[in-house]
Length: 86
Image 1 (cartoon, rainbow, N blue to C red):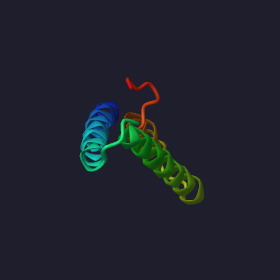
Image 2 (cartoon, rainbow, N blue to C red):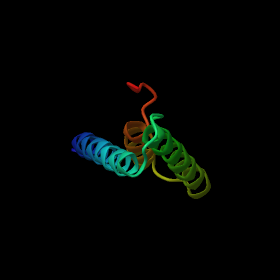
Image 3 (tube, rainbow, N blue to C red):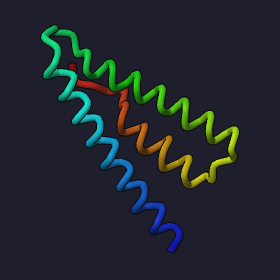
Image 4 (tube, one colour):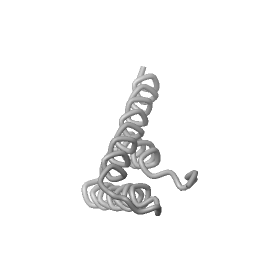
């Protein structure tokens, strides 16, 4: 049962991360007029910063492994993928 909850949590976190990326990138693109993909860059930087905060919190407060996986690996991993089509 615990494995099922982890899989469902990973699925939800991935969906939320992808949705956040889509919304943030769209908001930034609608407010800029340059050809450079500034929205992608800002979302990637924000995702890296968030991953650093989660990692620091996990180290200093001994966060459970399941939460580190869900928040760090899945949510932030989907929020800031490195392979982008520019």
